[in-house]
Image (cartoon, rainbow, N blue to C red; front, side, top):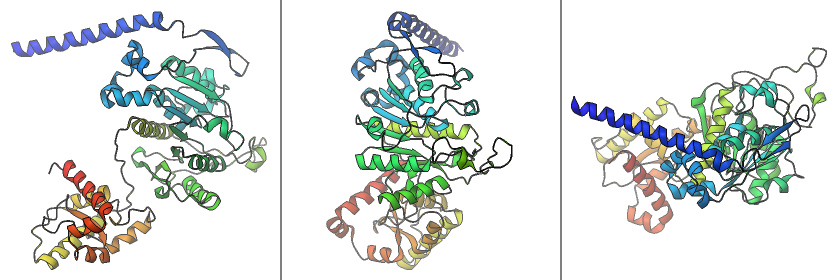
Length: 456
């Protein structure tokens, strides 16, 4: 009982000291940042040309930022997660976000809160009342204000050390240099117009810029279906399909662009467009900007917000050099894994006369096939087989031992086509290491990952 009371007293004392230190740091805030915040009113073209006080953005260098009491305390949890050196990489980074609606505003907000040192916010549109169900920071007072300026205004009160530039611009060929110059570390494409999206992605590929693209977040409701993968792997998304086709047709780009997308099929359709008379009308007659959507996509606000959070997490970990294994897109069901498990047992019995050394169940076969080999042959990790094509490809695949001298365990199984399996079993590992050193190293690395993850 005495020990328990001591423990409670220590926890209480720790909480009290933490509260006191936070209050002390907040007391410093007016003295440290009065000269930075609300220094002068900056005119924003709102609905009535109103004046809104804004902070100046200084964009401190990383070493100075990490020694600043307020800023370093604000980023404490990130520093604890990444380590100081990796967080410094984030603070030195420059990220461009194009499209600041439900997806882009949340992505930009979390990049800011994660300590990215410089942000360029780009959008030609204004905050509307109907967008408040999904926007990250906009309020009713912001309705009519350009989205870029709205975000900048709010951001400077969240993390004033960030250097924030806001451009009320439509991305196109004429604005490409203005938006993409300056060697950004990452570009986030949060545009929902096909022509503009394709043009931006092609420009990023041409310039050698890292880019992450968001596909359709509207008309969906299941957050568990959201994935990050190559554009070639995105399924059930009409926007992805159109962008893929246009990139291949107009620019010869087959893939290599990571995208955030949902495996969920859209739950609802575009609403019919009604003109001033209340009758259904041709939406293209009312486009302010050619090619931009006029018809309304029903949106559950949580989904674009999660898309944006996923984008921010992906980019921040990349900037910090923090390794994350994204979940592969493997469109297989339990019957496929059961089939591969039976096929493994039958092959072991035929080759070794027994299946006693099969040390995996169906659940572990799922891990090996999905997590290690992404539902594809270990010799061909291209993303050409997606959707139903992946289902069909299972008919030609089987699991075999990598090292025939070891049991068929999660750390010693590779997925191969039938003819590849026959060839593999006719060779020794020494031959493979000698003749195909890159393949040998890649397979060994993947199997080592399984060994670590299963604690073998």
